[in-house]
Length: 168
Image 1 (cartoon, rainbow, N blue to C red):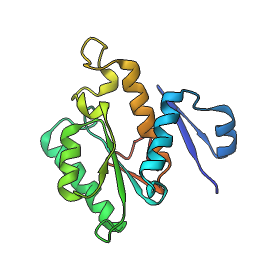
Image 2: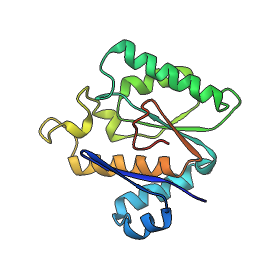
Image 3: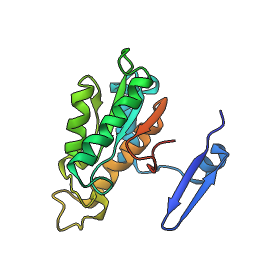
Image 4: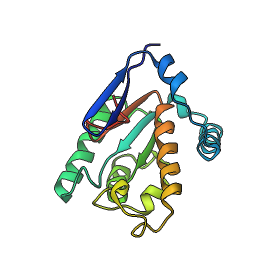
């Protein structure tokens, strides 16, 4: 099926209308990432039928009202997609507070983030120096990539930020 893939970097965003070209050029070769994704596919048999929820926080939302408001809007969006009708949801986030707010709306959703949740920062985890992080930066990057590719395996990704690299 046709897929549009956006690849962004500082000041520029490229769009690939042909996902075959993208997959032939960009490959995940790190076994730590591949093994965790394969493990999630086995442990979560409904992953491909679930909605992927990317709960943004940290550097995108810095006021308590904005954080709660953005998660409320995300929850309302999910209701429009059948969230109250038993739709399966997997959740990834780099912000513990926002993830806890999300769980108030959908306690049955499955929160998958591991390291990024432990190290939540209002500056954004990707902006933290290795001295501030309580975990190894390489391990954090692996964790974030696993979350990214897990979201890519879901039937649709919904995010609190319309500028999310994970969502439509």
